[in-house]
Image (cartoon, rainbow, N blue to C red; front, top):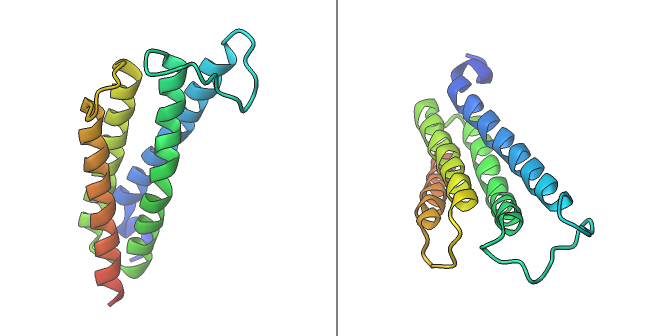
Amino acid sequence: MPIPETYHTALLGILVVVTTLVIQMMVAAVSKAKQPGAIPGKMDAELSHSSFVFRANRTFANSIDNAPALLGAAVLAILAGAGATWVAIWIWVYALARITHMALYYGISTEKNPSPRSHFFILGLIANIALIIQAGLALT
């Protein structure tokens, strides 16, 4: 079976992850650009969690920190021939965890640690680790 057919559900999950990143990038860029005196590439050091601009930029930055590992693990798992069902499940767990993390970060202004979004960060991390293990097992 060709890879796209076998891993169709996993590839749809990757599409959701990439689309989420693009949406976060646009939200961060537009919210920052609308600020008076906005300077490209420079964040006002006075901003904190009470500012949506800060939260939008942190959400995107956090996703950029996490996405390469997920995308790399997903591609490795797919190319190594890891079980398609579990690859898809873990990619979708990651995708939904990151979307929930994003929604919570956009909506909740808190400096509390852990915050409600932390639980979804951890869930995404678990999915990432599971994919790495699956890729490793498929390669051995």
